[in-house]
Image (cartoon, rainbow, N blue to C red):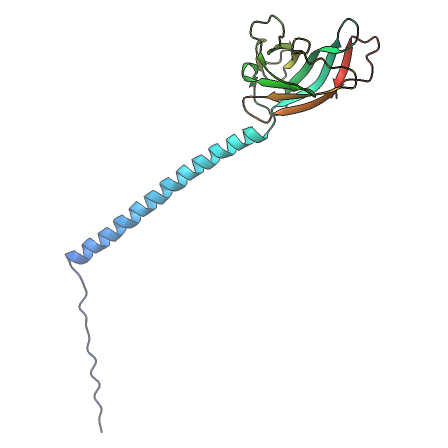
Length: 200
């Protein structure tokens, strides 16, 4: 008994203008999606870089306090002036001291001071800023690389004189970067010294 197997061949392809339109539409959709993804990734990269720079500026401390020297009154009873020597930390950015705020805190009082632009001496609400060594450019109120500057506070005018064995706290808040916090301690006796070291 012979069995016949019939195989039908379909050699026709689905061609025509409709298929072409669908193909072009798919290509366009893929191109638009790719463009959107590329643009989004570019925007995210820029934001990530900007955020990283801002975080680095906030976390890194640009200011370095090298010493804090106190000047006593005529009777060697208390410290009336505080001279803070500062410089930029390694890799630090220039600091405009006209934008810096300093807080001095003792056991009972907290005083906020801004820079004295008139150069008439520190007051109860103003600190003096002077550059003892100029590394870059001319002396000004901007602390730059290799500069060595002195900040002067008048504790007597602030009515916060520092007596022997007493402590105080200095908060130096730059425009950007971390606040610099330094505790200072007066020695047990001033003796005949007009200048006494309070830190380190």
